[in-house]
Length: 545
Image (cartoon, rainbow, N blue to C red; front, side, top):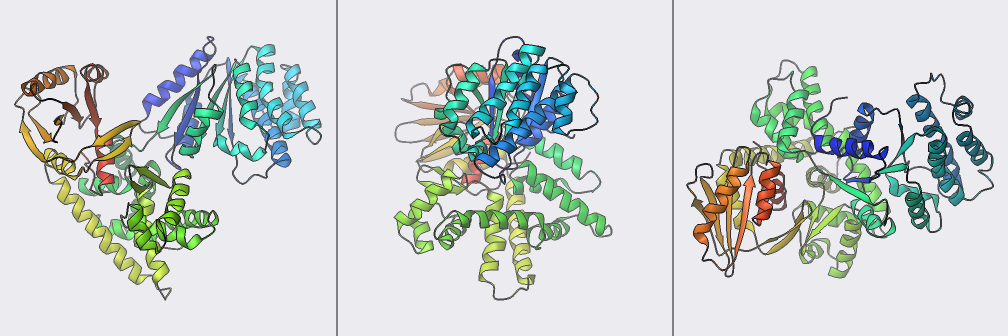
C-alpha cells in the first residue's frame, strides 16, 4: 500500500497498541471528514502492525444495514466471524474458509469457552434482545483473553452508525462495557465530527478508558507534493500545474488522487497532446461534468442525500448555492434564498450538525470547498439550463478554471511576506477555530512589513489595533530553537507597548523543542496549514511551496 505522511499518527497507534499488553490501555478516536483517509490510515496501520499477543478486529459499520433486531443479528455474526478469523490468523493457523461455522469449529480447540459463548449467542440471536447481542459480542474479547492471554484491539469504522441497533441507553451500556473490558482497546472512527465530538464529550465520557482524540485533516504541502509527483511521474507536468492541483483540491487526499488519476489517464488516451493547463481542464471536465464522472456522481449523491433530510428540499439547495457563491452571513443568504432569517438559520444549523457547513463567529462556510466549486460551476448551471447540451457548461467551466489558475499563478509569484501582509489586512474582528485553536482576528488600523534584521529572522509584520500590537515573524526554512529565541529578543524592542500578541509563522516544519520554547514565551506558532486555512476563509489562493 502506498502511504503518504501522517507518520505521527502511525506512531501514536503503535505506542497505544504496544502499551495494551503491558497493562496500559488508551482508547483512540479518529475523527475527520469523509474521504479524508481515516479508513486507509487504519488499514495501512493494520497491514504493518504485528504482535502475536494482540488480535485486531476491524469492523466496518454498514450505513445501509437494516435497523433494530435484524441489524443486531447481522452485527453479531459479523463480529464473531471477524474476531475468530483474526484470532486464527494471529495464531498463524491455516485458514481455508471464512464461513462462521468453520471458524468456530477451527477455533474450538484453542479457545473453547470463547467458541461456546459464540455458539450460544448465534443460536439464541432470534430470542435475545439487540442489547444482549451487542454486549455479548463485546464480552467475547475478554473471554478470549482469559483463556488464551491474547489482547484485542476492536476497531469500529463509522462507529456512530451502531445507533442503528436501536438499543435503549446504548451508550450507557457500551460505556460500562468499555470500562469493564480492560484487556480490550477500542479505536473508533467517524466522519460525523460534530456528532462524534458530542458523543465523546457526554455519552462516552469515561472515568477509566477515556478516548484520545485524533482529528484527521488534509495533507500539508510537502505530503501533497509527494503524492502528486508520484502519481504524475509519467507526465512532464510543470511545477506550477502540480502546485495548482494542490491548491485547487485544498490538499484533500481523495481529491488529489482523483485529479491526478484523471490527468494521467487523459494523457494515456491522448499521448500526443502537450501537458499543460488545457489538457488538465479537459481531464477535469470528464470527472466534474460528465454524467458518469466520479466527482459529478459523488456530489450529485450528496445533494440528493441532503434534500432527503429537509421538508423543503429546494430551500436547502438554494442555501447551498448561496454558500458556494461566497455568501457567509445569514442576512445575505436569506436575501438570496428569498426566505426569512429564521428559516435560513434553521437550515444552516442543521447543515452544521451534519458537518456540511461550519460556523465561525457570525459567518458560515461550506466545509468542502471542492463541493462548493462543483455546486457553482456545474450544478447551478444544470438547474438553470433548458437543454441537455453540456457544451455551454463546459465552456463556463473552462473559463472559471482558467481564472482560478491565473489567480493562483499571480499569487504564487508574490513574496510570502506580501501574501501574509495581504491576509492580515483582511481580518475584521472575526473569531475562528482552527487546529483546535480559537483565534481572534482583530481588525487593524495599520498593517506594515517590518525589517527585523536578525541573523535568521529577517522580516516580519507589524499590525496595530487601538489596544494591542501584533508582531509576526516568519521563516521559510525549518524553524529551530535559535530562531524562536532570536524572535523573542527581537520583540523586546517593542517592550513599551501595553499589550503584545506575538506570532511566529513557519513555512516549513517546526522542531518540537522550538515549539515548546515558543509556548513558554507565549508566542503563537502558526504553520502553513493554518495559514492556508485562513486563506481559504478569505477566498484567497493557497501558498504552495
